Image (cartoon, rainbow, N blue to C red; front, side, top):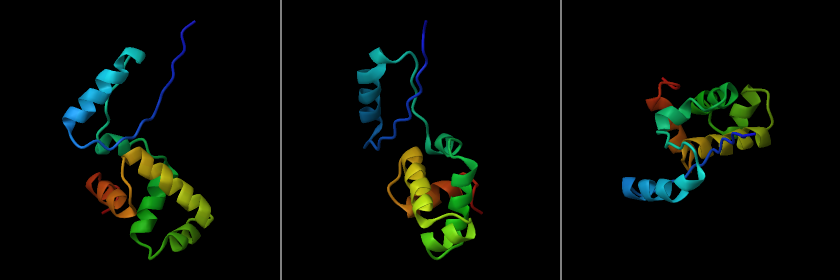
Length: 106
């Protein structure tokens, strides 16, 4: 019986050469693997994560955005960490830029 395991791996590599080297190193262990662009990664966000990004773009703080979405600040921060991991970014500023470019934020 075969099992399928999906692994979400988010790494920030300096260039395409590093990306290819990593893919070659892990490819013997994987049946299929591909690298998602940030535009593709944005589609991996849940609706709640997308709502949080949109609300953060219109808010002055994470606490304010959390309040508007009826969630605790810690829940908002957890969603934000997931967003960073999925998009391969390390800041709210970069996440908002990716969301803007993908059309989530106008």
